[in-house]
Image (cartoon, rainbow over all chains, first blue to last red; front, side, top):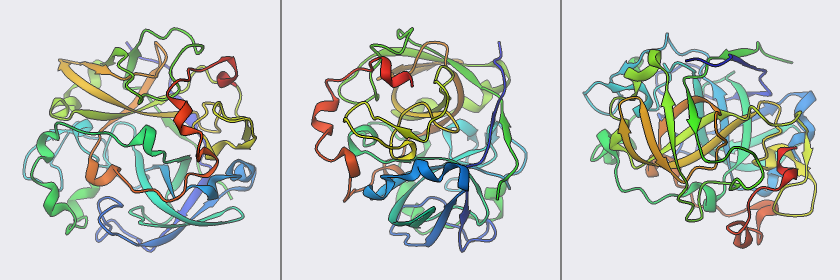
Length: 163
Length: 163
């Protein structure tokens, strides 16, 4: 079975200090305060009204510099091979990235954010408010990540993470 | 400025008891235990290995029955008009849905989940593990949702939410 392909048009672009994968934090948490800007293009700017009220937002974006999709990957945090859907690696069948960042301020069509883990010039697909009642869950199983998360805060992407 | 459009191919489909928008929970939290299944198509099934270890997953999907995109929407929970990016409404420029569901079990290419708020036959774009260290944030501002969230758990979508 398969379904129709879908085409999306980027609504904006990320301006970030990270120009290349090496050295980019692997996720935007861990006291990462990296500042950056999300620029929303003119046709979509009206849709930002009210976003400034939220302290955190989801950014959905395209991993536009990911290598070819792979179904099995070696995650950055552990020396094993797992299915790509059990990881946040960029080399996915549909290379959509998901990050939660802190929204410091909105200046017109510019979102000033902190906690970025996204490469400079990354195309943005969507912005959504982060809402604890929807988005905070109590997990009971962490799979292969069990026990490796303590180390994650010290890690930044190496060359492998582009694969 | 604009960037190249991107095309994605659904990796799977949602099987849910919700056949139409009216009556569907507006988000998958709030003790919603609605069971359902996410079926991953053959070319992508290998990518599921290890996902069963996680108790919660992100599902990224296409709001394939959303009406035309609007930049200003009346959110379901409050009688105001705000920018669509300050809401989780389906009628977005890029109609990508994001839900966190509980993963009860994997049976081969079938993910048995609970806490569904997704319509039956919805195309799935990506699955990612939910990881507290990445995904739980302490918010300080909730924008227009401030004070309305107490009521949200009693709400199900009305016809307006398809707009």
